[in-house]
Image (cartoon, rainbow, N blue to C red; front, side, top):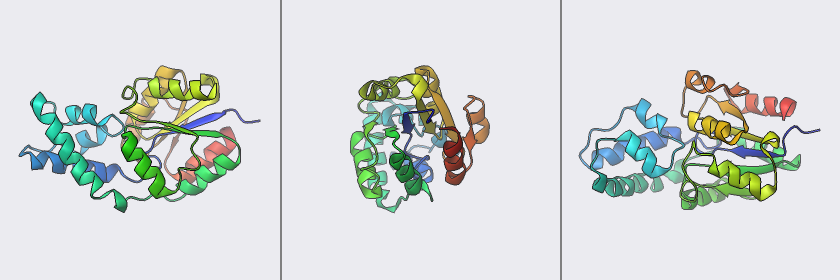
Amino acid sequence: MSRYELIVFDWDGTLMDSAGMIVECVRAAACDLGLSPPSEERARHIIGLGLVDALRYALPDLEAERYEDLVERYRHHYLSRDHELTLFAGAEDLIRRLAELGYRLGVATGKSRRGLDRALAASGLDAYFHATRCADECQSKPHPQMLEELMAEFAVGPAQTLMIGDTTHDLLMAKNAGVDAVAVSYGAHPREALEAVAPLYCADSIPALSEWLARHA
């Protein structure tokens, strides 16, 4: 018997190999405005947050009226390159297998609705996910709203829900929602930071994640 009914995935850095490009686009957007770009470490930390919150963290000293320009430049760089992105090896097979086993599958992401819809369609995974939530529809992680809405949509409780993500934002969102969480260390945040939030498991690859899910989910 399955322990969980609903499995919710983060997108960038968890299923899609996009963390490096996000960092590059944040830094390029800063340069476009004549600003010193944030360090790679700081830029990686923002992945998983809603875009405006992310950019405010990345460049906290920027005048408030200039964030709109920064968002525009980031989107310019990202949308001009998102066709280059691919799923992590094994991600498609994992999602297909979970769907065939009867799990309800969701996505909770810092992406915009437009961005997630583009990514789902391009990846071919849109048919497998039963519901999704984005940062421009809900409060940004680590607020639990995305998970709370997904659980309510499926009438599934926290004890039957699992969150999988590559950032501390994902893990803290799960904790705030009373939901179990599994981390993946091949995305945006380092293993040490992820393990400090005490997930059930920290997978270093999609195959390792798949094996854990087969045994424990």
